[in-house]
Length: 152
Image 1 (cartoon, rainbow, N blue to C red):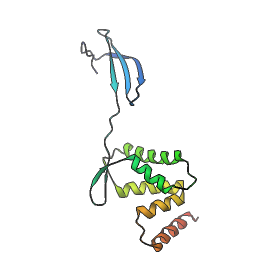
Image 2: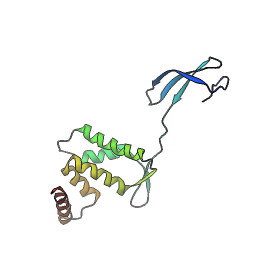
Image 3: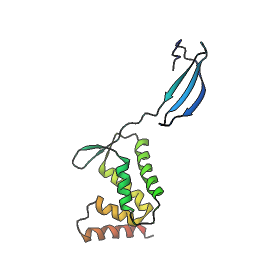
Image 4: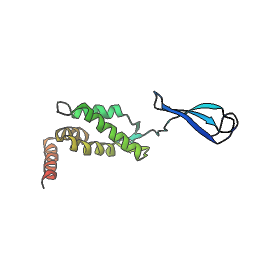
């Protein structure tokens, strides 16, 4: 960074504080001309797109993910804060992996893995919609698979 007045690259930060929109406001002082100015720093985020089964691309929407999780956890003794934490952990994983695109299949598997750890009934509910169970046999097969994984 250069001083906006003299172009010197030797600056020192006088004050630093977060802003309401998530940026960081910094007061800087040039060691050459001793003038002060303010800069704002904001984390650059890349948009994440979900590639649907039919090939369409849709911007990742945490609210849509949260709504699906809430529906799966409906009437279960799961605190809303746990549902919110699950949604945020998925969003954080996507951001940490720095992916620009994720398939709906990958996203669904991420959700199911975490839901299975949180609540098995919510997991089966989500799986029944996500995997589009056609009949009771498909549902039973998933339950048997779930029960088989729990055995030592």
